[in-house]
Length: 452
Image 1 (cartoon, rainbow, N blue to C red):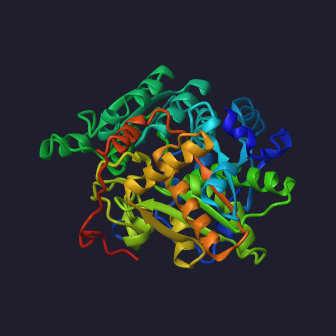
Image 2 (image 1 turned 90 degrees about the horizontal axis):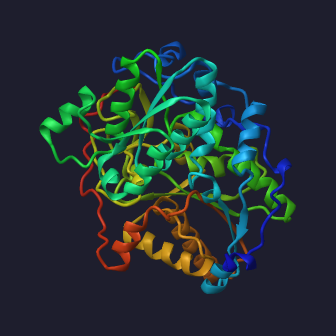
Image 3 (image 1 turned 90 degrees about the vertical axis):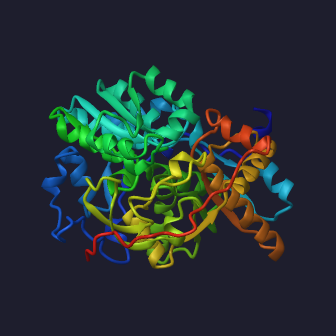
């Protein structure tokens, strides 16, 4: 790709890949509220083992700051293309006329096209060790489903993916990727589960949501003794696995003599943002940096910017434990925007705490302005971003233009968490003037359980 040759590429040697994940739990500014049942009682780790293998439950609740990456898994990370490149967007800087330096961590080079494979491999690895034969999961845009499908193939696990119906229809090639890797893919809501059947009876044309798909995947896992559920975001063990991104970026920037003033990423559940940002937030929590941390979400699903911080279910049917997080309500069905991976009603509990303490700044954008930024980035840097990642591109451009107004020579780092080569329907709609913005007029949370 000729355009990328002008960018500065950071070192990409084997020693850049860390041998431990970073766990933010012991460093949070306040204790993480425990998961609860509707009656307010605390869900024990043992109860979580109904859907997750014990090793992942232990990671979910661990207070160890550094958790070792098994050598077999680390070797597989290297085989699939880690460490991923850190690139400087010089052409973007020149086009904006900004004195800011813009770096991005590019996870789109991985086999399934996004960061999701980092935790998919880890979850498949631990499930195999404990004798799991089959995994169920949900997917929005299909990035997570594709990653788990490949991980299942690599570790000999059967995989069923409940794919949000609107994405199933908008993104047929993602479905084909999953099927090529051997996964079974069904549109959600589906007739396979009680949760899906109830929704279809009331609304046969329901476009689906991540919350609905999660309900179906969990119900499926609970009804089959050889099956466990695998989650692509939100929970601590998932975010933990993604910190390979930020830990690599720190070493790559250090080799260039750089450290970011601003760290940016898109947020649905929070995994790609936490993966990049948490290793740098570790420095902030220890008083070693005053860097800004900007988390970007769509206005169509504004959990951080318009939601409330309270206990809510992680799924539509209320099958998960209650988690304390920023939420717009588990019954909320986001509009069918093309950034399917960001169509979620809540956000990771650990990230919610960081937002509450002002450490992470949330912003929300309209779909059209996100695609405008994505096209501009593609025409300068040559990479077509996934619609989810394009939210981070938009924020990076805005911050760079702010730096231009103030004449500040800051360093910006963002996560380009995936490519958009299988998301071209969204680009087609934008280029043809058919793309529409959508956001909720009112968010009703009166039905949520009153649990503290």
